[in-house]
Length: 174
Image 1 (cartoon, rainbow, N blue to C red):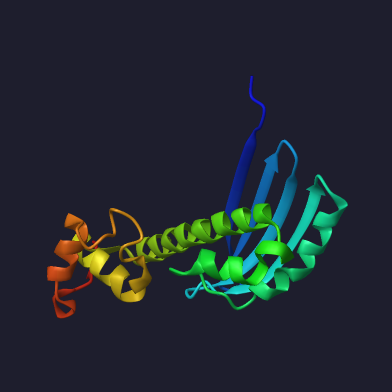
Image 2: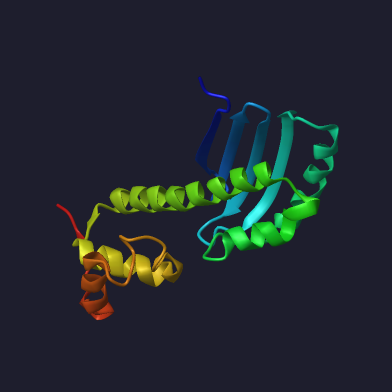
């Protein structure tokens, strides 16, 4: 029988103002937390943060919510988790809020991919994979070495690195 259970759900939505709205929900044996944030596009800078403890184990948890404004201005990039910890971690924060916010940062990166793919599809643009990857690396150099697929040793990245920018011709499909 399970003695502890945790689930995290994150949803990313494209907002009319050209930014992302991200909602995170963490629920476990002791906590239920809802966190809403807005991120700029394409830089993924935190514009606003709002959270609530729906359920918490201690009254002393509540002041952690007051420190969330320190996150405004942080960008989702390589040092994202470290910046969260520096801003709202440790004795002034909540490990569960930080974990949820980190997951939201990861999800908004995927949301940016999804929105960019949607925009490219709207233009009916077709690119070979190595050219698409080269463009992504130019737009988001921070993607390099974030995982095995985007590592310098990945065949996908090696092919993209061999591609010259001037070789990229956008072809509109018929």
